[in-house]
Image (cartoon, rainbow, N blue to C red):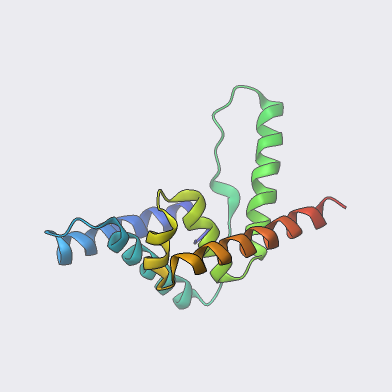
Amino acid sequence: MTGDYNLACDLVQESFTRYLKNYNSIHNRTLLYTIARNAALDIIRKQKTELLDSGDYEDQSDNPELQVIERQAFNRILNAIGQLDTTNRELISLVASADLNYREIGSILNISEANVKVRVHRARMKLRKILDSGDE
């Protein structure tokens, strides 16, 4: 959601701290994701800008040509995701990077599972349109 690796690491630590401090006896990963989401939204609101910095991507491959190709593809996708509105960017990041099903994502975002499916489909279509327009 932040696009900044170091900030994301800080938010993960802060989220676990809040979770363990306030909900130590409850084992609920949806609650943990909700806490993390809210912490990220707090940071974004404070900064008044949407962050997207792909400079922290490090490829461990031994092939320099492959590294360049992968970095370009990675930057292109990050750039396209950065062009989405906040809600669609959040949906794409939850679906792509979290091990959550649509019901859990709906619980985090306070929407129905069916609504999550529709919104994810629409967000993917917008992302595809952005990526396709860059190929021209």
